Length: 243
Image (cartoon, rainbow, N blue to C red):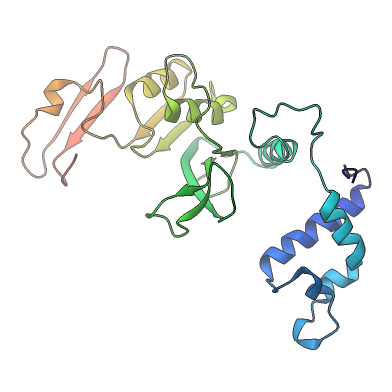
């Protein structure tokens, strides 16, 4: 069966809108959204598209040409949609001078090679997404984790992720905040060279931390700091147990 690559954008909007609504209002089977029984009454779907047309489009709907794209990308079938969403997210809102790097789990238990399990998350199984957000939680950009890609030269995976996500924020005086999964001295130095500030928690056992700080014997409430020749400042305080 030939893939349907949409050209009628009004129909595409209705189709995607119905899919989003189905995610909000769950019924046991797709066919029930068109059921005439009162218990399944959901007139929004029936009003905008017929059942047979929707199921046909659902079978044929593609976002990419299977014969032309790079299949080394595990997300190649939906990559144009992801790119379009990212472009749209950036065009309608400016995050300002502060950006927070976080990650989310989209609940999912299907069969994909990059399915993640994280017992510390509300949804333990799913697809992991890296994203820089504005302080009001607006997702300004995102990247779906589909396996470790080739990192940037001289940087590991976590540092490469942040640099790629924040590439268009460099040289604007933005301050990037992140937790200890991402924080490292090479990342802070790279941002500083690009006229971008970085603030994040840091594991005491990370590489490149000055030995005088690693071995510092502090009492509760004491704080010590040290600055590198490149302008990166470490601050360590005895406020709680550190690794």
